[in-house]
Image (cartoon, rainbow, N blue to C red; front, top):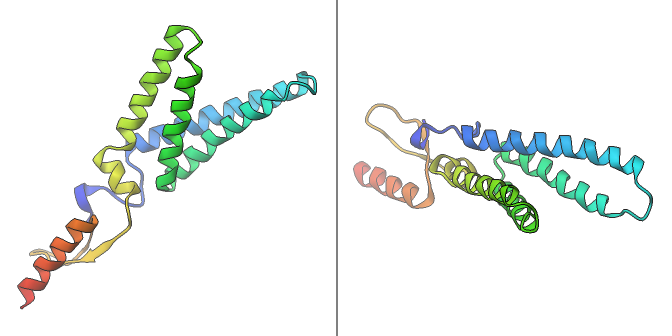
Length: 153
């Protein structure tokens, strides 16, 4: 049993959707970048930087699925970067990127996502019905541990 019924092994649906979106976007973009490598002359080095940004999407998506906390920050930074570079483009592109940034922040910082990306601390407690390990935050762990110890005295 885990807090809020969230499994530490499986990402919440919002995290999963963002990770898949990043993986697909990055993969399709990298394939496009490879095609551009063949058609560009040697002085068009910008494509290398663009390809690296697309690779970062793949890295963020993959590590989101693994539960790495730094990957959610990378995903937010990646999307914020796209908002920043959209400033000089048509307004609808800026609005779309900004909406995705808000969605990323909301989904990656919801309670279920915080538990998924949080520290993996297990505290053995004796519940009334069973004695299953419960995933808990630091303060919650200490409170449950104190409660359990005081019952044993």
